[in-house]
Length: 449
Image (cartoon, rainbow, N blue to C red; front, side, top):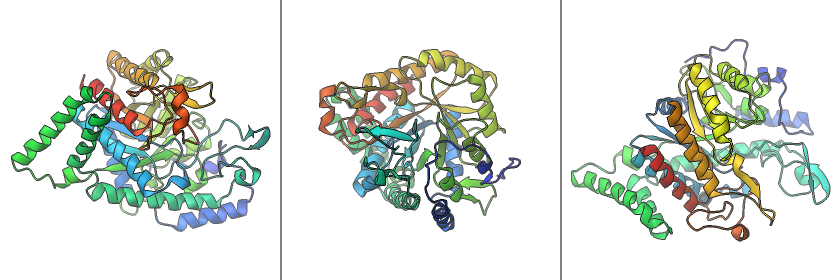
């Protein structure tokens, strides 16, 4: 597939306004680092990206379902084998539950191996009465509240590349080496059923999956077959620091066309989706699947124009709209958007991010999200699609495999005063492993309808 965009190069974004970029103090050093990254091998490959796009194209038609999840913002210090394994584990558990209940394949995409940059509302922030440069993710600066740590350092871009490469190496080893084998993932689900306060509610589905696996073995189906022993897993992140993304954009030697090889899927956020901005200009020319976050402050005509700019050939699997309206506003904002996109005949995959617009602050000062609010927005997302005759094709979560206490509610009814037990995020609150799998069982019921 060749690139059909006119007047585009991987550096043409430099002619446009680029928001949310760190204020790098040394441009010469920045360019040296970017040149080094440009000479290094790609992190992902064009063939993998095309495979993901094909899976997402099926989800557009309701023949598959997108599960996208992972950390709000990855941290260099947490790029360890146990952390990577545990995040992958909970996503595989969720995927098996959704696959069996929904009767359709689940496209598994992690917010991982590149989610080291974060947008901010201001270039500076007040910390303990001192104005400091805002923390923009580990690929720009450090979270420690002192001036030296907060000065953006381009060497962190190279460190981000290396961390992403190490993460991808481990993910490939896990998913192809038996860690994602279906019977093993189901054993993890049974462990969850035993430990969860709502275990009895989930026991029936878990037993059905086990019975199906036992039946396959009984009739002689080889459970060591690649389809049962391996898992297909893709990576994604917000395409935020454009110099880094440009450095990893390569022309495919086999089929032509330009691919951003920093990750399989890239998304553009609410703060950077200006139709005349640098992010839209850059992304219109790469052939990766693209996501676009859409929050309450959107203009429908702008959204339609951006979709047209990013997907002029109306290719299924190219565009995913990630709705993030909040439990109290989704009923107001989603239906008009669904109708407008449907009227234009645009092939988009509709996904729900029930996390970002449901943040609140406790009296103790913790940012948190309510499990009930998250679930409420998801249910409304499905119901509105059913009412409009459109396809609810995916979900997008911030989650971790760790036993954190960052979101309230769930089967254990985590309360505000319990958040301090294991509150680890430096960004936004995440669902823990148990809450994530509990959510998957709830979504499974919706897919089944």
